[in-house]
Length: 448
Image 1 (cartoon, one colour):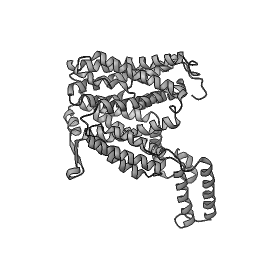
Image 2 (cartoon, rainbow, N blue to C red):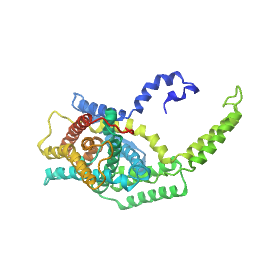
Image 3 (cartoon, helix red, strand yellow):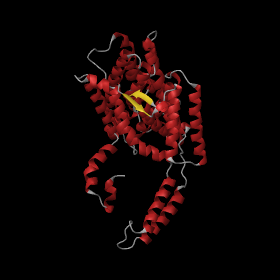
Image 4 (cartoon, helix red, strand yellow):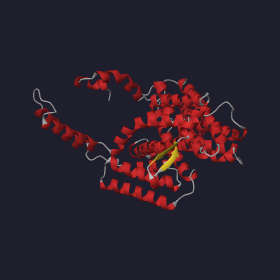
């Protein structure tokens, strides 16, 4: 809710000064803008006379802990293995919410985006594999599978009511299913040698978190501690540590402690107590009854919410405005002066074809198949809208860069070629999707 809604309570000068910045960070396009700025900064920095400082910064060793419990890793691995685990935690929370109450909660709603997402993963991966058969770069087949929903929704927001509301929901659901597929690919195919004792310890932490959920534990501190332990054990097990974020998200409670009627009754009672206690000239600093009523209202509001909702709301700014831009800054710095070297050409070509052609082709083909056996297109939606959405699905950026680092982390030549292709293909897919949707008939849907 905007600060302007609280004018009756008084707005401090600092709140008025910060209001434009708060409005900027509430915009749907902001996270996409920050990602673009971070990626461009990384590219310029990595191709400038100060390129050595760019590489030196991210390869600097950083140690957390002490003694036998110390972890020493380059800064870039703390970003990719540590901070990105929090990104995947938020992704996991959104996946859980979608399956409980969102677009994936019923079979009729879920069929179209799930089918489209599967097509949008299989076709790009297959194209990459065909181009890279017999090459060392075949390991990167998972790179063109994912969709960067921050960029995609940012472009849809720029288009406004030219895009039906149903397409925005469709693309969000496709991206959620994409994320599930990418997480499974990371867990199953991009792991090192597995340490079963460490994996068992992680499973015990996860079981404890699920048991605490069943027992009614709702403290964020408890789940934060359990999540840190799970992350550590998964990291040491050989499975990529970001998987721990998704698994812990599934253990977060998604139930309220009071329904809407109970909340209304209790809130009305507390508000009445507050009004009765608030006499002329009274201050909450000196009036214990007023302060007690405010504390009661806080407890009532907390019981009416779910821990899942509070965590999504609280962590989204951290993920959108700090972690993802920092990831882009750390991973998008590719030296372009030498071009794509010959050994990396198949990986670059497979990535570009997968994102620019394979992604929209897979999505649209599955949409046509499902529409063929259903009641037709949703009201106000045309094939052109799905084509544009499919092209926006080719904006791989964050997840594609992430999988590229997993696939080619030990081969700088292949990694540089794949990253260059991801950046170029994501730009082409975004621009193409924007132009296709911009030329579509303006939506007449009342929900647009």
